[in-house]
Length: 226
Image 1 (cartoon, rainbow, N blue to C red):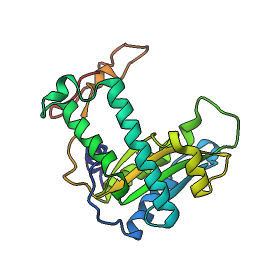
Image 2 (image 1 turned 180 degrees about the vertical axis):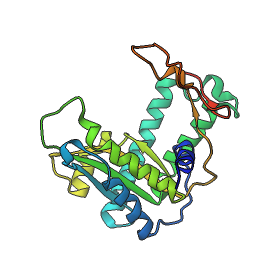
Image 3 (image 1 turned 60 degrees about the horizontal axis):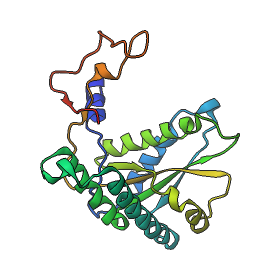
Image 4 (image 1 turned 90 degrees about the horizontal axis):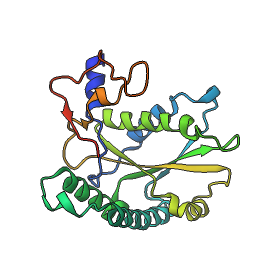
C-alpha cells in the first residue's frame, strides 16, 4: 500500500452503525486485534486489553446489557440535545441521517457481529492523559477493520453499566472499561468523510493563528461546526 492508498483508507474510515449479520471469521478478527496490539504506549507498557463479545454465554448476557444501556443513552441524548427536532424533520438533512443511523444502531445492537470492550490496566493513579496508552490501539483496530472491508464504531455508553459488565465478564477492579467498539460488514458502502475545513483546526505559532501552508484538497467534503 502506497501513501495515496493509505490516505484513501483514512479518508473513508467513517463510523459505521449499520451492519450485516454476517459473522466475522476468526482469521479476520485475529488480524484486526493483532494490528491493535502494534500501537504505541507510554514506556511500551502496553496496558490495553480487549474483551471480545460474540456468541458465548457470558458474551450474550453482556451484549443484552449493553444494548439496553445504549438505547437508554441514545434516548437521553436525543431528549437533551434535540436530535429529533429542528432540521431532523428533513429526511435528507445531515442531522436526520445521523439520527436514523444511531437509532438503527441501538435498536439492532444485539445483532452486531462483534462487540469489543477496550480496557486499560491501571498501573498508576488517575491522570489527565489516561487514554493515551489505549486509544491509539483502538484506532489501529478501527483502521485495520476498514482495510479488511469491515466497519467499526466507538461508543462510551457502556459506562452506565460498567459494574454489571465487570461482574458478568470477570473484569478486575483495577481495569478500566475505556471504550466499546462494534465491528461488522457495513450495510452500504464506505464513502468519503465530511470534516471541518482544515484551516479552522490547524494553527501555526499560536491559538487561532491559521496555518497558511495547509488547505483541503479540491474534492474534500466539508462539514460545518455545531
